[in-house]
Image 1: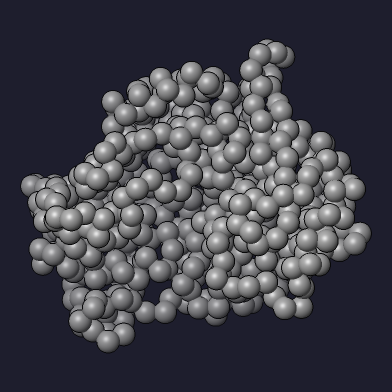
Image 2: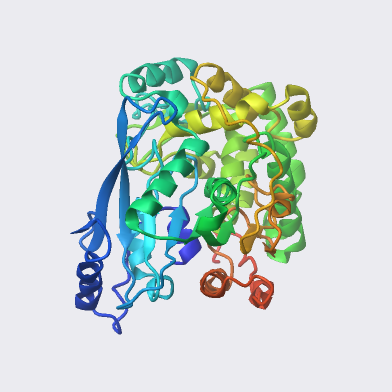
Amino acid sequence: MTLVLGALTCVTALAEPPPPDVPPSSRNMAARRATSRLPLTVCDPGHGRESMLCGTLEVLENRELGRGRRLSLWVVVVPSLAEVPRPDPVFFIAGGPGGSATEAASWFATELPLRLERDIVLVDLRGTGGSNPLPCDLVGDRSALQNHLREMYPPDLVRECRERLEERADLTQYHTPAAIADLDEVRAWLGYERINLLALSYGGRAAYAYARAYPERVRALALVGPADLEARLPQYHAPLAERALLALCADCAADTVCSTVFPGLEASLRRLVADLRAAPATFLHRHPDLEEPAMVTITAESFVEALRAALYGEWTRREVPWIIHSAAAGDFDPFLEMALPARLEPTGTFAEGAYLSYTGAEDAPFIDPAEADALAQGTLLGTYRVDQQQRAAALWPRGQLPEGWFDPVVVAAPTLIVQGELDPVTGVPHVADRFSRVREVIVPGGGHVFDGLAHIECIDDMLVRFLDTADPEALDTGCVASMRHQGFKLGPEYHE
């Protein structure tokens, strides 16, 4: 497993044992040694792999009031293996907004190149993970398969979640400006003068905002698939998904095997979506968690949105031609196996309430419906995601942004941006304009993450070398040219 994939998906359980050259006793000793310099205690974040350092820092929920409710920020530090670590640690900011940074602690502990000389600091931003999390149940009865294919933000469930969360949180105080102020309080509490920021997806927005607000505190930024401050999520989902889907169809057409097994893929996709818009499909599906098969209805919106999500990484992208071809022939089983959760009981800790709060303050209110309609014109996804997001935002308390939040301030800290060529969610091209000393690396054919591409270790190596030197100009990025797709899934009846 690689750094990018492990951190982005918050992997916490590993199949691989610790490398033999650094025994667990030495790793645990690093944690005990670090207690002399950090106000944290030795802990096991729940996976029994090795000791780390954990603690909570209380901050005001509403700093402007200067009083009132306080919330505890959950902090985990993977201590450096060096006896005298470098003074500038790596702070990791997770994606979402709504993902938990600390869930990746056990994985980061095994990423030796990153922690050989620096601490790795994981902070759950307010509203996520262990920092007063704001989860929402937007599914309802999970044993009803149809509930997993319903619209993204059912108004009744959004209202129910808001009412429940408002009993313990002022939802207007959960947004990036408050989160980066929290982050700087954590930095000061831990005694670090300057930090490096490693950020993924939405985390790139938070990292930029932090570097803009506290420029003297930032040594370097490494951003993977960053969301721009003005991305106005999900305004660009439709055109970015269209670009990625058309590229997928073109890749299949250029592949002798794929084009033979799945001929005319784009035409099949467009006919299928048109048919689903005219009349949603009903299909009997057997889920492994249910004793009896269940009938489900598949709409054009649920079908295209699930395909868009499948384009995030190579392992799911390579299945899309098979899914389209099967569905066009009336077999929706491959689609449902991808779109439905493998287990129906609740899993994961993504905080949907935090997502609604952050994007409800920073994105949805600033989407111009006319512009969104123009961007979505002729696309398979259309304005579905924008419509869903804006309707949910109208039902959610709106936080206020500081004056000048969208001003085009240029950050001077050395910056590396790694972006997938076909990212279906954050692939807006002008992110690099916000940095004066920046190197932007485009991964050919890459999505939002790079799992499944050949030679993915190239990304890990670049990130580690950049965070070591903080020199984007001198960074050798040649290995990116070797990263390629590794073929398509043809279905169980073929030998791959």
